[in-house]
View 1: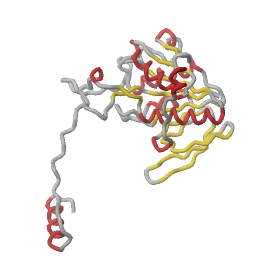
View 2 (view 1 turned 60 degrees about the vertical axis):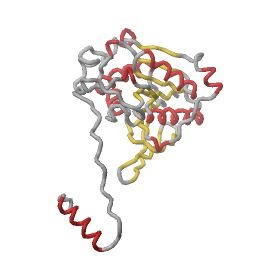
View 3 (view 1 turned 120 degrees about the vertical axis):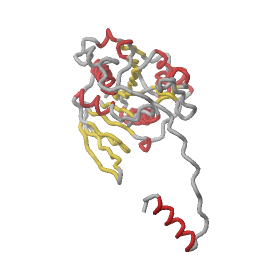
View 4 (view 1 turned 30 degrees about the vertical axis):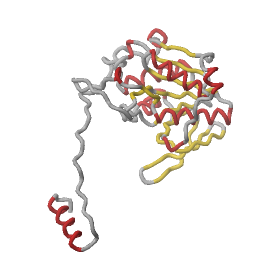
Length: 266
């Protein structure tokens, strides 16, 4: 059994977000981290590995420096890493990215008991589109917003988070699941894992590696093959200071009601 986990290296938005004059993110000046939801996906894969002895393969599309992130995931317990990297893939939107990652997953190979994990969404785009798009292009059943996982043979029982509760879904493998932070708490790298991570298999899939796949068409990958693009990104204006009303008497309540009525809130 193989568990393939798609991960993304993203800008660390917990600090200062740098924006270029044209409104695009200045990624070169920002620290990078592993996308938080993807860490939950990796942890879910490692927990299944602990239960079943499965092989965990982490896959990321990005520039060469993403190797450092993948090595960290190998140190956490993943068995293999694949970096999908080529100039032809640069500028891809979610549609083009899913084309390329789907081709990479096909190259790795999917068998009857295999599972693909993704994080719910990336913090730099917040689209939550790539995982479901990969599933569609591979013809896999999918469950998104997964908050609990139990595998029994070739079936996986998932608890899927909804706005007002949860639903339980059984899905046949091979399948794709997108994971949320409520699913688990990601483990840290171990000392032995850090020592071993550079001895574990690490591959780079370039354009030449994947070009024979029907999904890798110059018209559907990279910037030219992306049907959407970001026109502008910017830091929203800071909200003004709120007004506090103290007291619980009738006069304070009347004052509050009058202010809300004046703003047509009530």
